[in-house]
Image (cartoon, rainbow, N blue to C red):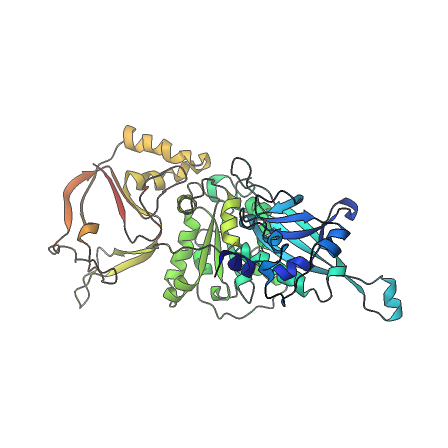
Length: 496
């Protein structure tokens, strides 16, 4: 297949040649244009045309043109940057598009309806874009509205074909599905230490960014505001998965007492999470941690973790996972709109998730000789012991200062009132791991000799013991530059 063939397969030449649109401005004024795909820049352009150009010079194509690529005007529908004979009055790039749809309206007041004729139908394209500024930052939505010339449409088949092509070029997730994506948004209104009314808090971000962008992308969603610690964990529990028919008053009872947050809650918590395609966590890394622990306790954990999609919005104090994801996506900008662009387009990557067990101190080993597990957890960010763990947990008392709390406590606990952390650490270096990735690594039992290839720091004094699974432990802590999303490795940072 030639390059021109590949372009024409994603951009419908016949449909584009027969559709004229007008930019919707004040009063509906504006000149008619044709839509072109610029194969050099990848942008979709609106080029002006007049009546003479439309009906005399510019040919109209259909699917019967077998040698369409030989027509002199064909090239204009896949224009290049070197083409200076066209007047481009508007353009948008598919990479900036999160939503594109065709809306149909009927004017029932058309006089023709008095004579038994069909009512006058009109249609327009709605394109929602978030272009980057000169500094490369996405901030606000640009809603483009293009009214279709009714003379070009009989059954709107060409118009629908063209909007489908725009959706495909924009790599919109819903364009690849037979049913719309449906997700559950879980937000912690107190994450980040600023309170529920904070401009950087989850509630404000949901109302001003998340909800509008999901609607523009055509993504169905329910929202749940957590009311206490562990609420997200509880929501993940298995349910009968029956659609509820509760009234609005009953929903208030399910979602808690009537507060200022009830205007967000749309999730009655009666449906099982398997009725959703994705879960979006809004808060810090802790809210996603809760979600994973709730799924970890389910009988169908493996199925959910392999089929469910997860997104996260940075509304917490440190937000290490969000920063890592944007870093791995080669996105230099750390903001909510950039994260939502990836979420709305359904751009997903596999992420290493680890499991660790806490053993019971007082329990005797089971009949099989294996130690008794007191608690089991899943992890996606890091394990910490020593100074880092103390700074994380003990600084909760000054949570109101934001991310500076860790710096303040590092001085307090690491310099002014320093502790000693004594331990024995054993590990298997990557170079000694099995070459076959499908081969399981057998963990040695406590107190028994280590297998060949393992190394040990024996009875040493540690200051920092930090096991990282991501590149960033926080938005301002680039702890492990070499870490990848799914490299299957732990990266250990030790300070002695």
